[in-house]
Image (cartoon, rainbow, N blue to C red; front, side):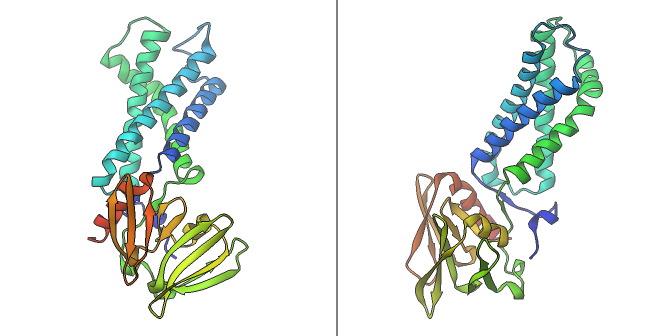
Length: 281
């Protein structure tokens, strides 16, 4: 199966789950503080400060706040913008620049209190101190987003994305054993039921369901083109008829059958953008 992460230029749509960004941002701030305390890259600019550890924790806090605010803006913006990894990395670089400027002001006006704030000194600060240091921060944050608290990547909705071999989905249990097989054109949605998943599909035009052991996490890992719309529901985007309602109360209805599933508030914007935009690509 083609992995959408393999092509950095492939378009995708971001999940609206803010918790992932918040967790990443807080861990980023923690790592920044630990790096500063351990490696002391700012030693020349804040020598002999009586509360040096608190100062470095403050730098980490600034990074956390900048990335939280930045991604709050991004999550409001992405419903009209198609992304790829290049754009996302450039956005991280922009946030890194904002962080550096704020850390510079924090260092000069609050920590050192020398009032030496000029454009030339800022550029020197960036080149000598921040430039060697921030690639590490960008790598840490990108790693957190992709590996530790993975962003849900929605590849563009295209029929050719699914190969002939993938017209039949072999759905495996967590042990790796195939528990159920269903044709993609017949799959409606999959619902989480504690340690089980309930697979809803069409058979001879009728709505059927099959219960087996498994998790939605495993399902999304095996079939990246499926769309998570709720913490308990993953849908087959090829069978979606329409998205109804608004962010407070929304549901997805399916083709060829009179059933629907709820769409949670945290996923509404990303699901709406995905369905309305990707079907036009």
